[in-house]
Amino acid sequence: MDCVIPTFDCLNEDEIIAINKNSYEALYRKKDLITKQNSRINEVALIKSGLVKIFKEGRLNKNHIVRLSSRGELLGIIPLLADQSHNYSAIALDDCSIIYINAQVLLRILKNNGVFFTEIIKNVLNTDIATTDRLISLTHKQLPGRIADVLLYFSEEIYKNNSFTLPLSRQELAELAGTTKESFIRTLTEFKNDRIISIDSRNIIIESLQIVKTLSKLG
Image (spheres, rainbow, N blue to C red):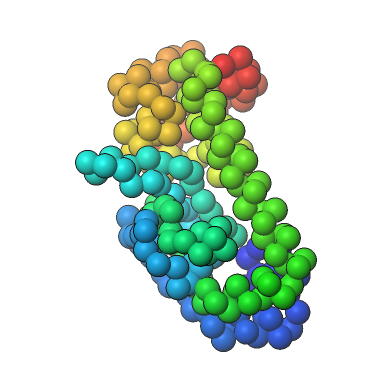
């Protein structure tokens, strides 16, 4: 198996063979459903490539975006350890390659390999801490600060580049920033007019990263 996350370095030869024998790769197109909220976890999904939207399904078809996930993240590992169903749904934002690992095989390895278990939990906690920090900021920051956070999220965490293409609709981006679609578009336009960013359809270039970071910090 392609070692897409560093934690796989903690596996011995027998464990790697066991995972290889009990996993398979699946390809998804944009908007394909990868995991379904409340479904039973028979396999854990490991993102090999592509970008995935993790969201909570609410009432009246209203969904809440939790985070975006990319190469190396294991989907469903925490509810698996807690003997629960999937607590979120996941959908492909572009072409994705997903490796499905048999849940019981992975559980057995986690129980027998303490180093592997610890590294997996560290990765999960780091992801959850970052998600929690981002959600908390929505309740404490003014609109420009929240929009700046969204831009930094894509620039520093998702694409690691000041130039990127937004993978979400304007409505989804507004939900990510905790505002309305109209307010999001208006603030983004103000950023453009102030030459903080350049916009061409969904293509964004952060022209002044320092100003964006300052807006984020000031909130």
